[in-house]
Length: 486
Image 1 (cartoon, rainbow, N blue to C red):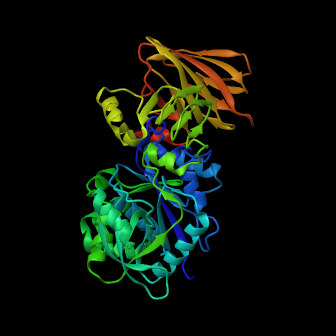
Image 2 (tube, rainbow, N blue to C red):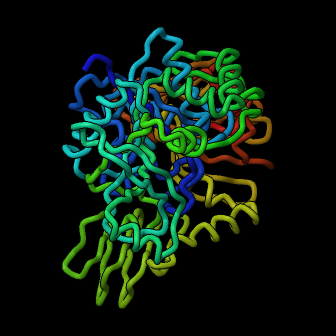
Image 3 (cartoon, one colour):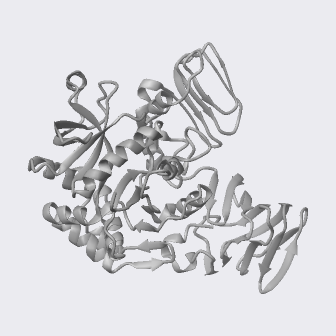
């Protein structure tokens, strides 16, 4: 193969159908649903061993930028770039930003475009399909991957495959079809000519941009202008927000793949993929993808079951006991979901109500990840809040101050370096200090082990937006989007 493969990982999305584990600040692609590694990390490692694969480009949001870099580093990967969408505009503009970034380097590889929140169990079969797709993409085809269906699924779009392409394993795409009703899905399955639309693609960067300019010049022009007016911040790239916001919102399928396939030009190809694929789009899909006990139950965490069949029960913090159900039970520190598995898709109705009532349980977990580590809220009430703060080795919070609250710190593990009003001193385990309201301060971990402190906040207002930054290792003091981050 002549050209290399650049993975482009689309890591946007909120994953509301997997609440309460998936939240706005840590959606499903960044949580470990089937093991310790997140779906994003699984996507990164999935390409290892494919000939010609280079470092990935990740497209995500400002909110998730440090989750991307931290999880990539933990998985042993360094992205070429992390492109930060100022606002969500669906997959076509996201891919266009990645393609423009690639072309700007003077290269034109084949892009392997993958959502960050999918599960693929048979990695060898996935590699075979990618290698077949690479051969076609090198010949300037637009390649998609169609999952061999195992049931008459009504929740997916389908691809109608046409004639075989030479001696390859690919087929010309005859048409893309919308999500069918039950009878139509059964007919698709029986015919053997239809595949589930996986949302995975391969094409050269220049081919994508050329076809987009032909079929959606409005998207191409807006993204190009936003890219040209964008700014680099080390690993991160920020397109111009106002210009990017003017781009229409559209998917890769609707913007390019469908109109190209309708031209019957033969350049739109599909590779069948039979690799244990799932978009893990609902709790029922998590149950289907996991390993079950003798009664068909999938359990994670501290769970005791009695007379249970075909259920999904996940505990993240406490002992969960369940009796006589055929349901989904998901326990987190601040919320519990109980649902019939067949109705688990309707969890979005609960999330919508939480938003309507201005509650926070759809936004953050009790444990909130930051580039320097994480914190969790242990207790709160009128005029006070208690946090457990864990600072990673050789990391530091911003030099900052708060106008409306004071803070009391107690070191319970490790050693803290504290800057307070120009004074620098060290706190060891069981030692404490006080940061008055309006005082410039900074918390650092100079050691090789995690630093853990208990912070008690007191004051009239305790919101995360009461932060004025003066210096930050992650340049958040220069970033207006970071005002709500500790």
